[in-house]
Length: 68
Image 1: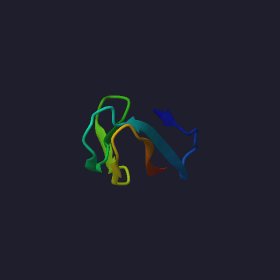
Image 2: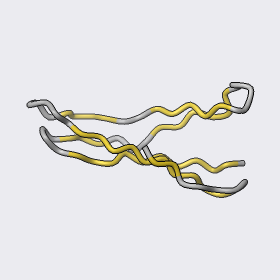
Image 3: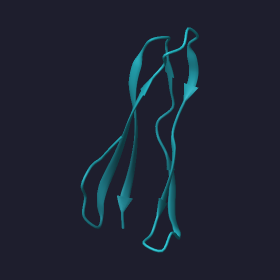
């Protein structure tokens, strides 16, 4: 996973490399992300794009969040 640096009111990108090591294709894959504050309070919940992943294929799923 890679998270871009950002300041308040800028877009933060979350990039998740995903590999399908199986023999069957994955029809729908996405990542759900919970963003927590310093005392573990939930600030936001976002999702990456949804994509299919063929057998033995690698892709990146990306989510963006405005840090405000």
